[in-house]
Image 1 (cartoon, each protein chain N blue to C red):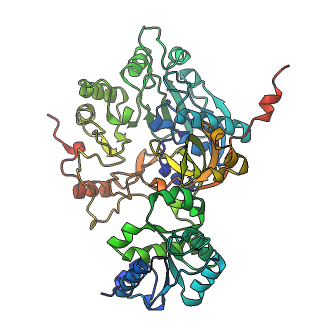
Image 2 (tube, each protein chain N blue to C red):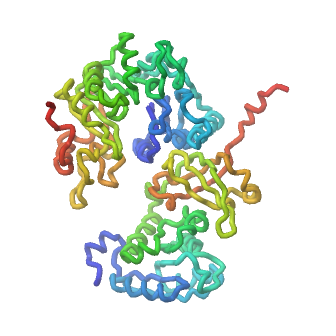
Image 3 (cartoon, rainbow over the protein chains, first blue to last red):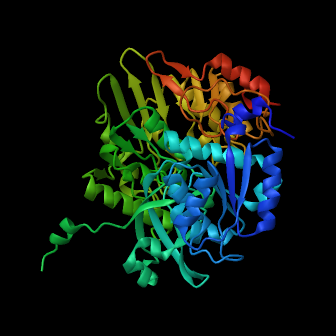
Length: 247
Length: 309
């Protein structure tokens, strides 16, 4: 099956024959399966790169040497010993003007590993979405390309808002914070690593519970996994009011 | 002037699309979360200038909840960093002090004596004051133009108090209180008829989401239409009572104006965000004819057209 011209136009990537997508996944079987599916969609070139690099820069160079777009699996340490994640790879590729889509299979990774990189990752999908319809790769690559050209779309536009830290947990040996986002879906809790608050709070994450922080958040996100937090800061202290206290 | 702030990004997007960089006043009618939960982001957005916020105190709200903590922290931050004046004095004693230019903005309710007690307290008539009965009731009028009444979630007690005081509530446009439902279940039709008679509007709008509970309620629509049979009616989103399914994927939503609308992405908008011109007064967007075509296309049994028995 090939994608017709109308579908190409809808996807927005232009001539699919000019597109070469690198697949970077430490699970070779998954990578080969996706290679076949993308080829069936009419993509000009699909290259399965061996996920053999320990160093991020080397991996980025390998993608750029062979392709003009990429699909990266997030966890690259199961079948290989990469010292970087797929999220870091996509962040690096986007910074170097190469569109990329992140694929993740594990929900826990979204909050802890991926959220810190989400401001710079325009497109990520779940492994299950990929299985249902591989066309989503092309749609998300186009979303990535559009954001690189024109800036963030409405659902990724960030607004400053308060964040209430509700609980602390330990995920894969790391401190995780459960938080409520002001002016967003009030019944939803999102999780992020305590290290995002900075050195002091990473060392004493218990102290953050019950505290308010402020951050720039993409409040147009529909799901918790789409939310990112930028410019996190503790609630400012009103020094002027403090000066009014009499001894 | 901004009146109320739901936790819906549509508000932030609309402020941006309209090119608004400053509000002279932000008024929160009452402290229910569907009216105030969007305020933290509005006032924390550093690019948006605000002169003064009117927000009532409310003893029925749990100050230890995460919503209250976020709200209070953002208000404190706004006072500190942007020097925004925060006032809790929102009652009929404010009168038309918020007016400016060609617009007269009147705070008709709550009455001063009820506001002095506040939600959670017992009023002089011995009745409990709820958040809704202390909701601000605001009328905006345009010189040589029309007027709109924005009663928030004001309930039967609020309107009884205003009527007893002889307050004139007439307006060309009514945004129906409490999203078209009233806590006095079983008496909704009579309540709606009475409110509509007090206001005598030519246009009635319902600010609603698409929840499991029908908003507006069928009984409210009937009562409202008994009192104002020729009024133009518009709901912001589709009620499941009117249209169990969203608009089909193969149909185009072409009636909305240029502003972002809640429900548009899920194809469950109805009139969407309303653009009202008080000079007429008239509805600039959506075009009423196109809005009616949309209802034809999606609604199985629209409440706004049901026969009034």
